Each structure stands twice: as C-alpha cells, then as structure tokens.
Length: 93
Image 1 (spheres, rainbow, N blue to C red):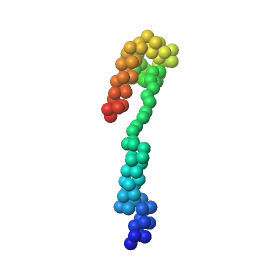
Image 2 (image 1 turned 90 degrees about the vertical axis):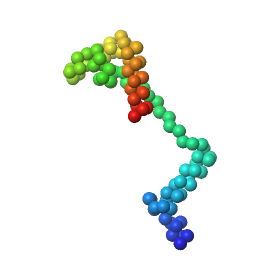
Image 3 (image 1 turned 45 degrees about the horizontal axis):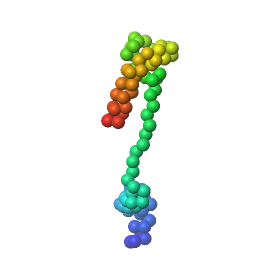
Image 4 (image 1 turned 60 degrees about the horizontal axis):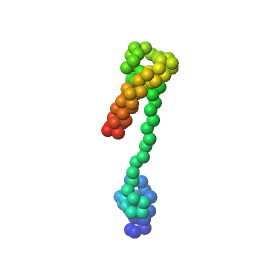
C-alpha cells in the first residue's frame, strides 16, 4: 500500500498529489516566506480612447495622433486623475 501511495503522488488530482503539493508549499513558505505579488503599471496615455473622448467627439472612430498628444500635454491633471481611477479599479476588481 505504501508503494501505491508513493506512486499516487504523481497522479495529478489524487489525494496524495494534493497532500504532497500542500507539504511542498508549506516547506517553501518556511524557507522563503509567504508569497507576495508585484506588478507595475504604466500610463498608456495615447492609447486610452476613454480619456480622449473627454475632449473629442466620442463618435469619431479615429483620433489623430497630434490631437492625442495635444490632449495629453494640455491636460496632465486630468490624465493623472484618469490614471489613478483606472489603477484603483484594476486593484479593486
């Protein structure tokens, strides 16, 4: 029976497999510490149609790059607010 349990550790989804996975996780946490998450966010200011719709006709299909640049340069405070809102929603949901 012990040999069978030893081989069952390699069968994905079996009780022995999950027991081994749990013990491996506990050992990793004991050695390295609890897991954490790290991510970076960047402001895709020229690519957010929602931001540019604040200043242009929302029904236009294509906003010219010069207009996008103008929106960003003339409204950094609104862009900062928009980025903060998107970040908060990303973290929350």
